[in-house]
Length: 363
Image (cartoon, rainbow, N blue to C red):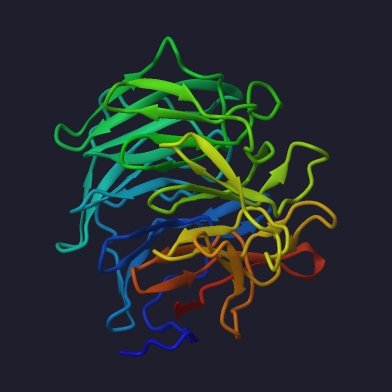
């Protein structure tokens, strides 16, 4: 087995067309890639309702069936149930064309099963979506410019949605980031009511249907456009856009939910500031890659990534030969290596370039 830390190019035979903002789900053996933005023409997105499965063992792509596939969309939510890819919602080509349907995809049979349309949740955007004990929890978000602090739950056994609301729910928020710890859904950052930034971090326990506010002492500054990662014992927050002067961030912190304490992430040798980046746990290190710089100057793609070891409390660079940086790409950790594919970058003349190339690296 090749254990050397080096970048390799993924096969292009049978891969989907170049795109960004697509669904990206690791099934345990294959990478499911579907939907997304193909192009922008006269102010309207050209969207996809096709995709493929990538097998890293054979370095091969297999097209996903189009029969009964959902309509074309981007920013749809998707998760792996253990047997199927569950896909719901998303955005259509215009702001008033937002799908409120979904489907289950069986990668063994290469077959889609549309979900029932009875009592679907009201359309919302920028909500969190976490898979917990056979149920899919959608929390908060924004709906028709109204920030909400309710939720919806999809039960995979009954294939039915149920509305969620709580007397102790935190203030409405959207564009927040969440991680499932095995006991709670931890939520950090995002916008609060109106145009303000959420000023607290919270946790939701789906088994007790209760919320709690996290310790604020030592917490990272308020931010948006940031991912988070769960290390198995701590929540990692790094990067994003600051609520103070809308600056791109590097600084972050780790949160221990059992002790209810934060600790700072060292800044020595950390990657450059960025937002909308990949943040993944490899089992040993937190990986940072890609993303963009939203300010100073706006639209620039971020520089090289890095790896942070929470035990050694130190950063190290990724192996030499990183692929061209991008944003709105797909990235998954297979348990052995990082897979990157697709995405976009702004080229000369403000023309967006969409990628179809993929890369992989063992770490």
